[in-house]
Image (tube, rainbow, N blue to C red; front, side, top):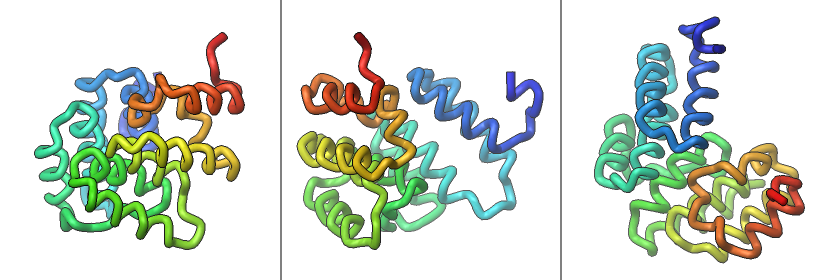
Length: 178
């Protein structure tokens, strides 16, 4: 409905993209992110938007295309930062790079001043390192990071859903199904 009311709003399209990701509606999310790219042409957002498209491709298991998309607008060795905008590249690099590269990225992110714990958790989740992903998600909860409210639907955390620690975290947040 918001898209119908304001069809040229990048903010609305970005919100719709994340809703479509949460619903695992990959084709609609791809269409939305492509429209978002068109709407923001000429703005300083290409790296961020490439990260969103790369995230979508990585979630679908297409690492080659995900890394190519990201490299199209910046160096493929660029660092995802420990901020909320580093979320998409963190997952892509976690899922698509060699474990030793992921470990180096995670260490550098952790050394930043007050890194965003949820972004570090996503990096680890992408790489399959459940223990560290859960540790950093629990840290995100302790820090009251806003994105912790979305962990129940975040597709980057699908590998953690069966973990008892993840279920306990959902209960503590108040997102666990009874």
